[in-house]
Image (cartoon, rainbow, N blue to C red; front, side, top):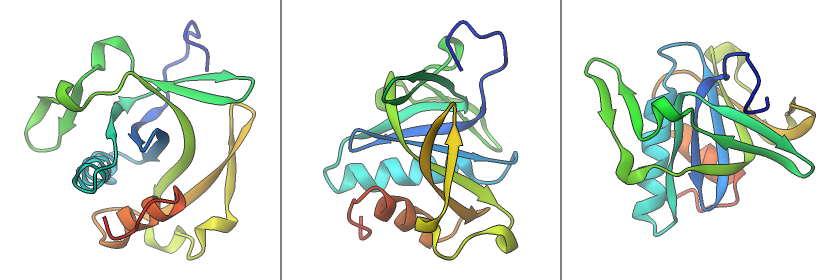
Length: 154
């Protein structure tokens, strides 16, 4: 999706972990924001640069070598905390990142056991895609870190 596209940006959350972008999608209440915050916290605790690109809506800008993810200006530095409202997280905000991984939060029966075998195409570019169960699970952050080649123990 180009920045001047009139369509609504995709619903999802994007984080930057070690310079690699992770786009997390799923139904409302699936745990996108919770997974994003857990990933950022664990990466930073392990000395890996990490931050939030966008929560709720993500602008995807394809180029010749992939896709750059950005946050719509009105949402920059903000995150929705279910049960609380909008929180300022500008101290962990990252303006953009090149996508490296897709994460789809799905019903447990639709999750894939061996995610490295699954790929999806976005805006003409193929990406590895993890299909993880919705809600908080201990293995979800480890699966994302492993898919990016980062230590799973973070």
